[in-house]
Every structure is written in C-alpha cells, then in structure tokens.
Image 1 (cartoon, rainbow, N blue to C red):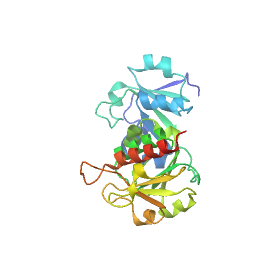
Image 2: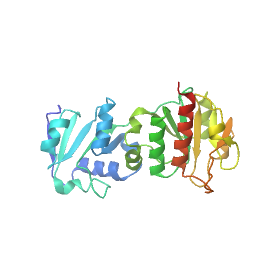
Image 3: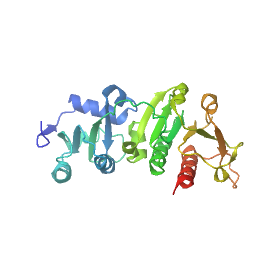
Image 4: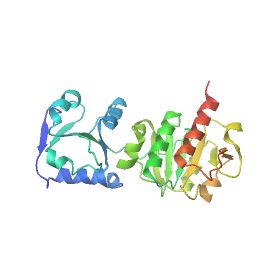
Length: 259
C-alpha cells in the first residue's frame, strides 16, 4: 500500500479505531501493541525532523484536504476518520486534528559511557516528560527508567516531552542492578548533604539519578553513587519539584563541560 492510498473510517466499531483509542488513552497499551501514538502537529513534525517514518498517519476528515499537502507522503499508510469519531480517540480536552502511529523502538541495552539520566520511580508523567526535554537540551543522550517510573512512551509523557523522545536512547522497566552496566560516575542530589552543585567540579560524562517525588532516590541507587550534591535554596523551601531540580543539575553539567 502506498501513501497515495487512503483508508476512510466511518464506523465506531472499526477494529483499528479501537486500537487507536487504547493507544491514546491507556498509558501502557504501547507495550502490548508495539506502537506509539503521537497526537498533534508538533509531535508529528518532531518525529519527521528526526527522519522517522510513521506506520500510519491519521487525520480527521475535515482536516484531510489541507493536511494532505504537507503530510500526504509522510507515512506508509494514510487513514481519514470521520469527524464525529475523531474526538473519541483523543484523551485531550481539545483534540488535535491529526496524529501518527510509530513502531515502538526495539529495546536498547544500557550504553555504558553515555551521559545518562536515571529515573528512580518518578511517577508523574509531566515530570518525566519535562526531564526528558532537559536531558535532550543539555546533552544527555540516554535515559534509564527504573521500575515504578511513569511509562516513557505513554501519551502524557510524550506530550510533556515535546519531541525529546526522538533524540534519546530510552531504557525502561529495569531494576537498580542494571545500573551496574554504567561506566560513568553516578551523581545523586540531596536537600541536606553534599556540596552545593554550583561549587562542585562535576565529572563528564556522568549519570544523574533523580528520585521519587516524595521519597527521593532509593537506597539501591544511592549506594551506587560516587557523588552527592545539593541545590542551594536561599528562599527556604523544603524541596524542589523533581523536574526543576533535574533542569538545574543537567544544566550545571552542560555548563561545566562546555568548551
């Protein structure tokens, strides 16, 4: 089937439509289907910019005449869905009018020497997506998510990541013992111990470990760290949001090793 071939869906009971609903609304359905759902122009553009070829491009019927000009050749298969059915796919309050379905990348082994972000049971999808954006922005090419972390390819994390996924090597669902494959120093943050991050000579490459929103980094990860640092908070707050802390720490590493 060529991109010029268009499939029109007008029945609510269509099997493909049911699979799409699951991909768009279930955080872990991508693991069962081996595919991920990208909703909206921004994510779709980001995927294409990285040279990815979607398996399917989907459009609401009223958007297809205009979208065909830009996206008609983007995917292996084009699918046009009747407008009354389109809102039933999306989990957004204001559904986008297009989306891509991508094949889920094959599982990757941990790259021992890659600048890395470790996520230890970070459960909020918005936080995880924001951390992925910071990782991509500051030169950390690998993210390792331990079991208990929000599903990396879930729709909410994808939206919060704003395309960062496509420039990162993502490893998820592993136990702390998998971190022994890393050959770079692991750094943890603490609110009460360690040198202030802006006064510390940070190694490069390295792996920053970021922990659960309430409990922080667990003992199994902390025991593998070679350095602990803290973020100065002159305003006196007890702690920072984990995504904000990640941005500060990853930026500090980027600045420290910049030429």
